[in-house]
Length: 390
Image (cartoon, rainbow, N blue to C red; front, side, top):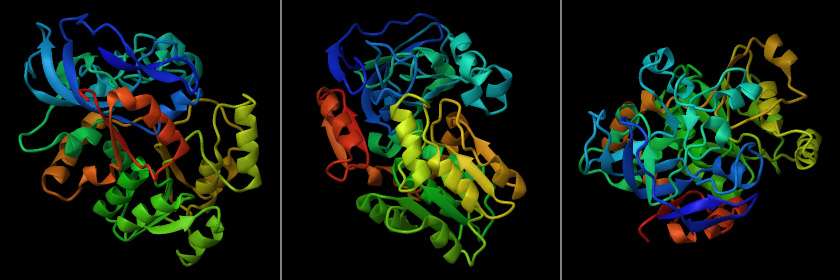
């Protein structure tokens, strides 16, 4: 089968690889009908995620049709259209039962590797390094879905792939980022990053009662899209973010701040430039300019939410500001399973149209060029969907 394979930093290509087989009675094999490139895939592409190996199949946003199921699978059958969360749940551990599926105790077979950095391992992830299980990803024609009863969600009739594909990651990620801020009606929310997750966070903030959303980015096309979803755009390379956020909140600062950027944050200030130098020199894995700025600008007693991906230890963390202002800090991979039914209702009712963020469509065989386009941010790219059959 064709699959997008990692061969080193900024070196991916579509190779002919063996089709997956079932390794346990709880497995299913899914024929991929749609898959996408996520912003967090670029962290692997750029070489910043440890334990990615040559030959790994990338991709964690995918959906398709069930081709075969193991003897223990009861909830899905051959022929079902399904979406598959990028975080892998066993469905039976205490965290899964509590709705914290991204913290599953049983889905990462390489927990010792993750424990070195995190202390305790989160769940396994599709296509996202061997620290998180080494599972082959879904930028391929077929994928093995583990714990299929817990991880393959049937798609209702009448909904297209492009309507539901982003339930696998970026829509729930944007929604959780806002939901964990405990938004109250009338709150002002500031969001750094107007990529796909940022756009879903903007929409989610209004769904959950925000009166105003302030959105930061440096790319005009992304700021324009954010404005189209109702946000007030701020160009962080042209405007002083602190002054703008204070001006637009009567000097109080936003009630909730959300970092939808993560470890490769851009910035125009001295600390942001220093972050980039240290990351390029391999002195740190993360650029944390956005986290610092978000904490510093947040209103007293406010909430700080970090859905952006970070992987290591950081310095220059404004713990004093976090403490002095009594801020609440929430982070983590997305508990996709918890939110998927609610967000599916939003889509079915027409309140959210995920397909509106798609800007480019390619066949899987063009995936390497699509990655380069996405990382270069050329042609006003926002979200790329790949068709494995093309």
